[in-house]
Length: 380
Image (cartoon, rainbow, N blue to C red; front, side, top):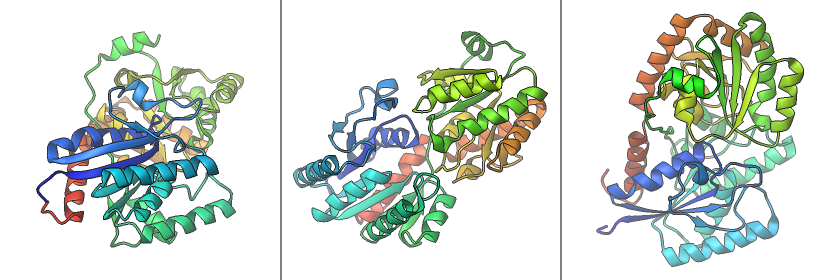
């Protein structure tokens, strides 16, 4: 092949989160490797923060009505037809879909138009914690059928791949693991970052970054923080993010007497991590959480529930703590680290060293370049 490899990349929406970051990094990084990448996305839902507005307003994106988050028959059918037209016009060598809805609609369109290579990335899965059992079973069946018609399946972590295989989705020969990658943040002054948030040097700052939805279990985190603040008087929870549970969670924190600041979505995440003593993840289900990678890149240790591939980011006892999915375990881990500045410093340094080596954006792009070249029959 003497011309550039042409890829059509499809994602349901560019809401703030790991999939949007990864898609953005690939769209920007692939052209220097002789790969043309066209990004197609739906619109974010009402109340969701738009990754493009916050960080990537100049990223070239083809917006397609009907993709988005919600499942709507007419909208999904419209998106399916539009994707078929685009694929016939663009004649891509590879269609690469990301996350659940785009993975279904995009791969079906690629199959209909006989695109030579179809790739799908599981940034997590919807098999646990999202839907009632009957819907989860239907999702499993659809994903298993589509997996057989997909050239390569990417999981963002080893545990995510294992859970999908155990559910009968895909086979080991078709799956590869490609972890997310993040950029090194600009250096921020710790005290300046704290002053901007109205915090003092004596405060022990626990930072949560993410969507305020049920699966993230911020209610569990608030319950845990109530126990933490009984033992660490200067502790404060800083919540960065928004979602349908925002008002309810703020009321819950106030009712529990938890000292907390809800900041909504912010574009200055480097400053927020600089101000933090500890990052925390309280979810019931995850892929490989990019927020934990960002915290580690900033030298901030983390306490996380043992879900998805979180334990592949946070090495228990070395770069943070991995705990059971309950408030008591979460609180215990946070108290241990908040009361031990030496361990926090040691774990933060180890976290940064590891993530710089293994989870950089250049590695993310390179892994995809090698995969794409192999799939179209070119040497890596």
